[in-house]
Length: 344
Image (cartoon, rainbow, N blue to C red; front, side, top):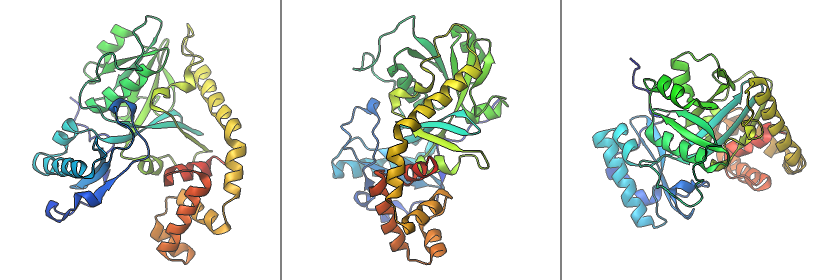
């Protein structure tokens, strides 16, 4: 019997002050990435809620500050009174999913999703019709919201169809019934069953490959959990409906050979680098020497206070350098800035 897993993407932080001290309007933010399945316009507000050492971003589904603050208050009260499991079943969370194509060098793609607390509507615009020619992709995920969102993403991509699997108890039965081309395994589950191919695309059974993915509270947590000591890093953001781009050219082959898939993945990243290398290099060259030092320390996971102490400058000066780095590299987060630095 498997023990209950920790909530997907949770991150340990200091608890939020008591609700009576919170001005929820002051806590509202607008996140840079939207999830198409949420049907929003992209202007909706979000809130970062932490309680009892666990934290998530919650999309609030409205650009109206008063309505958003009321929903944020509701989410917090449910969390305090009924616990995180109830909150995560009732409210959508923003999470970052990273797909671990190769371990050394690190070749990952990642995307932002909103967990789906209900099944997505049938016949949603943009959803591809069923077809026997589409390759089946099995998703082994115990978190229902993550599973629905990931299956929705797969179903948007031409040539693929999702097969959900909600538990390890049903895993072998679902595998035998559907014979998918690829099995996507939450890495937490893969590690619990000692899956030997974790963190790289590998054979699971004849003509069935397996790929692991990780769930993170945000992009910064994803970057902090990348493995150390490897030969290099290539980490690329993907649109939710394009998660399987690295293997689209080989997924329909009659026989699946993991070496061919991995070679195709490497070609995919090489093509991306060839398209972006001149732009990335010129952007990095525009940084001042101090900005380069700040970016280098950011790539080591240093917080602003640590950067300020190391460089002998104030935290406000560090904030100014980070803002300039974002503008020069045309990125919107520390994670994207660091990825650009590592891909140079």
